[in-house]
Image (cartoon, rainbow, N blue to C red):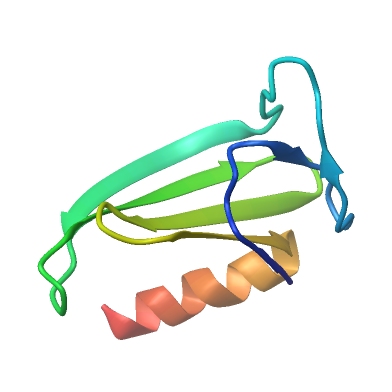
Length: 88
């Protein structure tokens, strides 16, 4: 799993180098955007899920804080899905 600060730019799966393009567009498919209020801080928050054939990206953002983006292989994403199912 790769942890990166989200910049809105596109990354290549498995590559730690930022791919800069003229429009900075992401070529991944966005499957969900979930907004909610963070229980601890009370800030507005959002989780964005994107994917391509090789990987899944989760972007976690607080309105009043930094963004974090993690990119992982699909097998790692399945483990997170299972953990969320267990927790709910």
